[in-house]
Every structure is written in structure tokens, then in C-alpha cells.
Amino acid sequence: MLRARGTGMPVAFTPKRRRVFLEQLEVVPNIALAARKVGVTTACIRYHRKKSKDFEDLVQESLEVAIGSLEEAARKRGVEGVVRRPIFDRHGNQLGVEMEYSDSLLSKMLSAHHPSYRKQIEVTGAGGSPLKVDLTALGSGDLELLLEAAKKVSLPEPIDAEFAPVPVLAPPQTR
Image 1: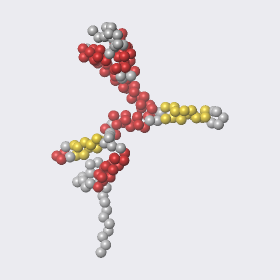
Image 2 (image 1 turned 180 degrees about the vertical axis):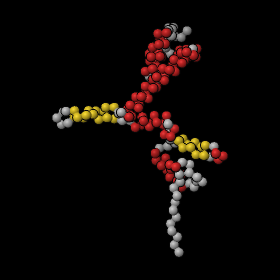
Image 3 (image 1 turned 90 degrees about the vertical axis):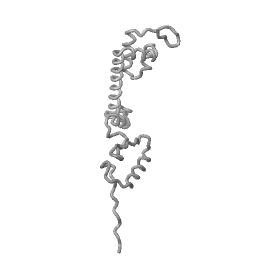
Image 4 (image 1 turned 45 degrees about the horizontal axis):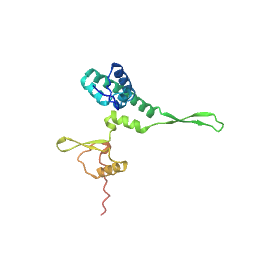
């Protein structure tokens, strides 16, 4: 039998505890936090997830609900913005509000859902196999240097219209 944290007393993972655990998990997708809220350990949750496919399915559904809520909140913050502070005139009348938007949240959501926004370039290598270069570790200055270096490399055919080599015009020859 599983024991309560710190007391050594047995704790039953009752149907009520399961329900509350799943409700907590729908709010915040953190198994350890939800387990703590109902007074059980993560080991208890792991045991029941392995023991019952139905419980595992309910855990996955709860996690999907929570993640969906987080995505919606991130989208709202990026697209609609949140009120940062009210704006008043010199007489104290509220004229409106200053909104704050999160470009970084939108960027992360786009890169998670749309491959074209990921910091990755695919280049065809020898034998037609793709070569993948992960550029997430590079800073913006490093990326600019890499792109400049790529422009100097002669390629038999462009890898992508955006990264195609720029033709260099030779100066006119003098006689």
C-alpha cells in the first residue's frame, strides 16, 4: 500500500482523489503538483497509470485540456494582448488602456505548429538525403554570419528561394 508523504500512514487513491487529481491536472498540466494537491505521491500516480489503461487515458485527456487552455491563453496574449495599464489625461479622465502583446509567445506557437517557422534549414546532401542543421543554439549575429558565408558558397542549384546564392557581377574588363 502507498504511504502518505512524511507520515508513513497509508493513503488510498480513492475515486474522489482520482477525480480531484484529474480536475487539478486540467487546470495546470503538472502531475507532481496535482498529486500533491490530493495528498499522494507521483509514484502513486505512476502506479495507477501503469495499472489502469482507463486512468492513463483520463490523465492524457486532462493534460490535453490543460495544454489547450495554455495555448489559448498564449494566443490571446499574443493576438489580443493584455491590459498593461490605463491611460489618463491631465484631468484624471481615463482615455484608454495600454495593451501589451507577446511576440515571443506567438513565435513559439507558430514554430510548434508550423514547420516553416522552425529555425531549421533542410539541405539536400550527397545521394539526395536531407541534411538538417539545428539553428536554435545560434544567436542572431551568428545566424547572419552563417547566411553571409552561405552566399559566398557556390551551389549547383538553389536550396530555397530565400537562401539562393546571390549572383555576383564581374566588373567590366578594361582593354
